[in-house]
Length: 108
Length: 115
Image 1: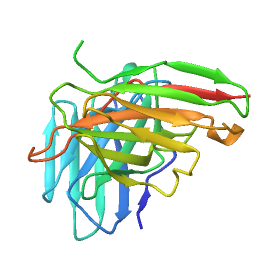
Image 2: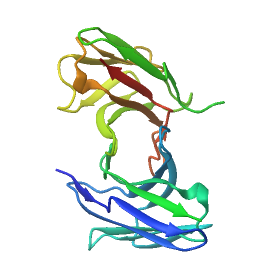
Image 3: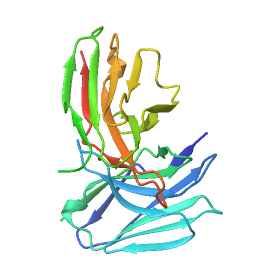
């Protein structure tokens, strides 16, 4: 079975940094994805980690520790448009198993 | 636009009616997935096609649900005798095979409301 946990909500100020944690226990692992989803829209790809360590992509970074079953997404220099749900998803053989998502609210 | 497209974007139906949704994947992608997402939850896997072959169906997909991908291109998802619990966003995604990792590209979804 799949068990993927992430916080329900986070609030931060424009320009600040927010870290969204994700822990997982899954029967198969071929990588961990982070997706961004604005209300009423489809998820859009942010990052992918399959090896331990940090992947940096502009204002967004993602970290993975396979031994701990742990990942985080780091959002820097927050902008109002970053207000969205952030989904942690583990790739098994071919299908994604998602967490419930973390709603991030950016305040001015 | 060469992304994943879905039709319709919104569907309102009465309980007991049948509905059918269509997904057109990115043209060179031979893998196609259907997910269902309810409010406040992440997407849940429903079924997966490689070309025209349906390789897995989730136990979430009751016998009222059927999906096809007849020519390995577009796919349809049909729900028969809809129930209020079927109200959700139905997402389609596609990915290429043979990639170092299988990033799945999502369509805009079809939002189903069953009255």
